[in-house]
Structure formats: C-alpha cells, structure tokens
Length: 502
Length: 120
Image (cartoon, rainbow over all chains, first blue to last red):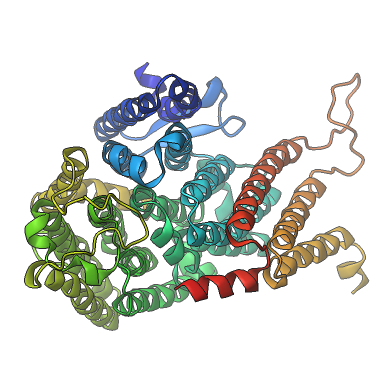
C-alpha cells in the first residue's frame, strides 16, 4: 500500500471524481463530504511521501512494473514532495471552505458536477507534480487545464464565459507548443523519461532540434505560468470565476506550471544548457523583472479587488521566474520558497475575498469600507496576507524576498534588488488602500448585494460561517508560522535546489 | 537548396498547416472559427509526430515471421492520447460557445466585446 502511494495520489482523486457525480444523485451534499475525504487522504499521502523522501531520498515508482525508459516512471524527490504537499494542503483547505461558498455562487443543483470537475482539477495538478515522464506531464497538464476552463465557466457569468474561452485558446496553444517540444526531444533521443533524457541530452546540446525543443517548452510553459508577455488570460479568469475557483487556481495552478518549468529547465535540460547553450536566462530575468513591476503597477489601477489580486499574482509569478532565471543556489531556493509562500499568501487573500462575497456579494474595493469591525476575523486574515505579500519581517513573504534579493546580489545584478524593493513599495500602496478602507473608514449601509453575486437582502455583514472562516485563518496563521519557523521549508528547498543545479 | 525544400517537404506541409490554424485562431472574429483554427493547429502537430515514426523500408508494427524492419509504433500511441486531449478541448470550447450564445446572443468576438464594454 505504502509503496504504491505515488500512483494512489492520482488514482484516488480520479476515481472519486467519477464517484462524486454518482454519489451526488443520492444527496447533493454527499459530494462535498466525498471531496473533503478524498483531499484529506491526498494530503495525508503527500505528507507520508514527503517524510519518506526526507528519510530515504528519491523514490522511483514504476507504473505497472515496467522498467523505465520503456515504462512510465513516477519519480519523487525533494522538489516533487515539497510541491505535492503544498498542492494537497491547499486543495484540502479550499475544499473544506468550498461548501458554503459554492452553494451560494454556483447553486445547489450543480453541486455534484462542480465537485467532479474540481476533483479532476486536483488530479491533474497532482499528476503534473508526481510524474517523471514528459508526455505524462503533458497529459496531466491538459487534464488540469480542461478542468480549469470548465471550473471558471461553471457559474455561467457572462464575463466568466469569455474569460474561460480566452484562457482555453491561449492555454491550448501553450500546451500544443509543449507537445511540439516533447516531439522534438523524442525525435533526437527516442526517450520520454525525464531522467533518461537528462542523460542523453548533454551529448546533443549543439543540435538545433534540441534548441528548438527548448524554445517550444519555454514558450508553452510560459503561457501556462502567465509570465509577463503571455499573461493575458490570467486577470479576467481569476476575476470572474467563482471565489472558490479563484482561490484554488491562484494558489496552485500557476505554481504547478512553475514547477513544470523548473523541472524541464533543470532536470531535463541542465542548467549549463540554459546558460551557455541557448542563453535564455537573461531574457527570462528581463521578463520577470518587467512582470514584477508591471503586475504591481497595474494592480494599483484596479477597483475590483479580485482583479487587483490577479495582477498582483502576475507580479509574484515574476518573482518565482526571477529566482529561477538567476541560476544560482540561493535564487532557486528563493523561488521554491516563493512557490510555497505565494500559494499560502494568495490563498489566504482569495479566501478572504470569498468570505466577503459570501456575506455581502461585493467585490469593489470601495465597498470594503468599515468591514474591520463587522468581519473582524476575515479582515485580520486579510491584513496578515497583505503584510506577507509586502514582505514584512516575521511573515513568509519576507523570507522568500530576502533569498531572492541575496540571489540577485550574488549574481551581480543589483538593479534587481531595486526592482524587488520598488515592487514591495508598490504592493504596500495598493494593499494599504484596502486596509485603509477596512479599518479606517466608516461602514456604509446599503451596499449589500450590489455586486456580482446576489445575496439575501436580509444578509447582515457579520463574519463568515465557521466552515469558511477556519480554512482562511489556518492559511493566515501558516503565513506567519512559516515566516518565523522557516527551517523546514528552507531545508527542503535547499536540498531540492542542490539536486536541481547539479 | 533542393535538399532543403524538396527532401523535407513533409515538414513544410506541417508548418504551413500549423500557421494556417494559428492564423485562424488569432485573426478570425467568429468564436467557432477560432476553435476550428485551433483544431487545424493541433492536427498539424499530430501529423508532424506521426511522420517521424516512419522508418525507411519499415512495415506495419505488427509481429510477423522473419526479421522485418518495423515502423516505430510509439508516436502513434502518443498521438492517440493527444487526439483525445484535442477532442476534449474542442468539446469544452464548443460547450462554452453554446453558453456564450445563450448569454450574449452572438458568437462574434467584436460584438461580444461591445456588449461587455457597455455593461461595465
């Protein structure tokens, strides 16, 4: 049982996605219970995998007993286990949170269908992280993306439909580029297994086919990661999707795509290839820096809080790619830490916005006035999340920004430190606007139900229900916890980056 | 020169198809035409993959007596998976287009943008 854990991480959500529609016919709420149990099991499994990897090192699981490179291999090392734990944890708390929010925003009739597509999304995410085979990664990437398109459009809101369609077109183009990259690699090496490719490729680095393959991978994965020039699908998708969908996609979707990018860049094509062969790391540094600044500046101009958080996400993805493109140990460590931290911080922020939408149906920043007294716990979580994003010491944001700044100094690019500081200040500008409205403005009556989601006119602005509040507060507490006791993520990130840069 | 163009004619065909599909996806205003363009784009990639499976003098990869040279069956299998992915994507895209038609009354992108801007 334990040795089959890598494949169970995928089989359990996949089968229960099918069972959820069946179970939902008996009673709709049962589909939520099933989803919670499944995500809890996945979280437990991922923690078990992480502890096994920390004790014994890399796990290699052969699907069906077939030896790689003829068979598909699931290879779990430090990086995998780290991201897997993160994804499973976020999936679990968002599922617990989802009950009330989905009942309001999507309607009880479609509850089983929602949880089916949701579990398929989780399957896709876990599959991308667990697999050690590039084509398998493409398949799971597409499973995750298709479920994502359906999740965004599921509430039937007009803007959400167009946003989902645009995301679909861009995402499919990205995935097709990845497929082309895989094809080129297969043409020259005859293998699809990541470890095998890593062995065979160094001899072929001069070949134009390998360079083309890398170019296709870079562009395709950059579309999925929403790196600066290819980010266009992200703001509308996060803004108009239901709150739960925004939360899970913001916290995990792009992180897993960033993980896939790191895997392809460092494990399949080694770091020397990127630095000396095709020299694309400077290009990535440039785009990452522009993403950081553009994301923060565009976020200041927004009036809808979800759109503001979406542009902020674009900036944060710039941080992750910046660390990776610097190609030194501290940089990759900072990126891996930022993957964890951003998932926690953005998760907290989007969960809080979901609480506000649940109680008041509003998403405009103007309408956040005076909520500090009416919804104290949610707003406290928002403040913690906002402070982490800005990078106040004692929160997670500070740890990863510190590492990224140190990495920039090590690489001799001091102007990147200026970019990092400038973006922190810009973040302080737009988050302070919201915090100012929350705590220092009086509450205006009559704003209830004027937003995109209709709530009961009798609905009073009191704090969110417990089932929604507890996951939000857990995420906020973890933002601070991993900021103070950062040793565990740091050690895992360090081991992972050492292996990646070897 | 002849080597470059005529000997690799299959790659030129796929590039042409791929760019046609890509152009349709970007330039056409009708959403259904965009989906068709996406489908052409993906089909070109599949053809590319399958073409690399052919081995010179190879026969179909079904076991027979003797020691024949077989074609490579693996890309065919990969493309079966990719075709399934492509069909699912087209299905989701068309489902979203049906919903868009119900909500907006049109599937022309410029009219949809007008309606969205009016409502903002």
